[in-house]
Image (tube, rainbow, N blue to C red; front, top):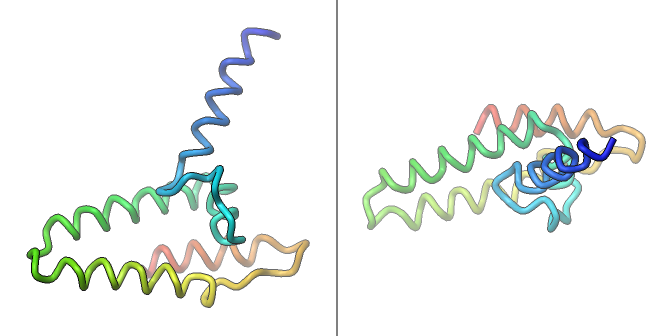
Length: 103
C-alpha cells in the first residue's frame, strides 16, 4: 500500500497546477469548478497557450488591447456562468465549457 502514496501525491500536485492559475489559490466558484474538472482545466491550459501565442504575434503597439480584451473576458465569466444552486454543479461546468469553446 505504501508504494501508492507517491502516485497520490503526484496526482494532487498535478491537479493543483493543472490550469493556467494556481488551483490552491482558487477563490471564485468558477475557478474552483475549473480546478475540479480535468476537462475544464485542460481547456483553461489551452486558452492560456492560445492567449500567449496571440500576444506574441501581436504588434507591440496593440499588445495592450489584447491584454485588456482577455482581462475583460475574465471579468465577464462570472456573469456568463453564475453560481448554480448548491447541489447543482453541472450547469456551471456546462456553461464554462461553452464559454471556453466560444472564446
